[in-house]
Length: 454
Image (tube, rainbow, N blue to C red; front, side, top):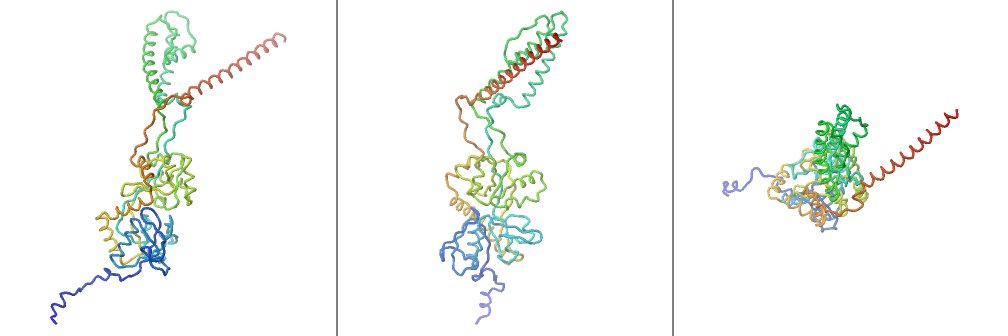
């Protein structure tokens, strides 16, 4: 035999990892749409085996990262044996290398690798990790801005700083008016201070006043006050008309600082939502962590959102869609809105035991799958399976930053409740004052009679 032909077909450096010959790879997963979902379908009905089970292919896994691992094992001829940790059971590892859940399993050799949105930086002190798979950004879907109470309707046309400016100018004009009318050089009768107050208020309310025309300074003052009063009263009238017909809402929570300063709390079914920021140095992030409620029961979390005063952690996916849990439904999605600032972000990876021999091949496979758009395709496909079209449409306004157009309303008693409230309060205060005046007058007469008789 020709030795040259024999050696030309030989591989002197054969890659033994290119064909694993059916070697099992113990993999931990957590059910989390659209990354990994699992379903027991019976023997030979699924696409992966289950750890500690003799039946073949009884688990069907899907999702962007689940299918990624299935296709990886098809390419390298390995057998994916899955340990399903259920929903939201990511677990943790502490500094003493104690822990629980999926993340702890590679450390105790329960699994070799774990997948499903693994992006916790502190995990990398104990485990190896692959190339990034997708970009994951976490936001808090905050309670929507509430309609302002109608009892304060008369105050809404102007903001607080403008009301303060008007109040200060009213005080200054009253003082100037009283000074000019009291210290005039023509010997006119000196009015009481109360008249100056009511004269200035009357002008600002477009009401007539009795003018003192004896001095030029008085006429100049009244002319300037009348001019400013006309501008302010007309501006107020226009603002009040819009307030009465278009509902006014409170300030939206657009940043993490806004949410930290608000009275609202937020939550999710797993503590893993805050593990990435639990050691943050930011005061706002520390406050956000303290406001977090871990509510594992989906129905309880759904009911907690119905009053409209509770936030929910959600994820903004690489495919530019919002990923929400089953506690966000068509009947409560309108209670939320998205802030402009995300809580935190990272890249998801596959975490493994230290020195796992297939990590280089897995990282290369992840890069190839991303280059061909497969991961993005799997993500969208799995999201469509678990998120209805109606819910996706309901989420679009929050995703795009657009809200439903405000309907112009006809005036009702509800709109003038604020002025009516002021009227009733004024009438009640005047009645109470009148009663006190009668009581005071009666006591004064009684005291006078007692003094005369004594």
